[in-house]
Image (tube, rainbow, N blue to C red):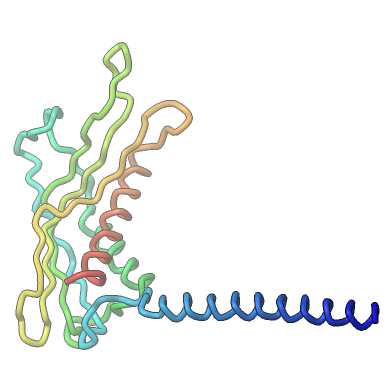
Length: 196
C-alpha cells in the first residue's frame, strides 16, 4: 500500500508540474500574440518605395553676422556635398526607401543648407572655451515625384553634435562636424520614414 500511495503522489506531482509548464507556455503564447501588432517596418505609405535625393544647395550667408556669441559663422567647403552623401547613405542603410534616379523615384527630397554654426557651450575658470556644439541647419521638403505635390516641409531642421576641445573626451572639430552630419542624416531619414 505504501508504494502504491507514493506512486500516486509522484504522479500527482508530475501532473502539477505539467500543468505549470503548460500554463507558462500558454501565457507566453498569449503575450507574444498580443505583441504581433508591433513592427520595425516603416510608416511610409505603401505607394512609396523609391526616393531621389536632390543635391543640397548651399545657402549659408557667411557675410552676415551670427546671432550667437561668435563674431562670424564658420564655413566648411563642400559641406552641402557631404550632407547629400550622408543622407543618401543613410537611406541605403535604412532600407525603407531605395535611392534611385530622379526619373524613376516615387518621392523627391529637396534640401538647402542654411546655417552652419559652432556655438560655445562651456568655459573654463579662465574663460577659455571648453565645449562647443556644431549645428548644421537645413530646409527640407519631400515631394511626390509623380504629381509634384508637397508631402511635407521642415524649415530650420537641425543636426548637431556637442564636443569638448580638451580633456579625456576631446574631439577635433572635423570629427565633430562629421558626427553632426551623421546626426542630421539620421534625423532626415527618420522624419521621412517614421511619420507623415
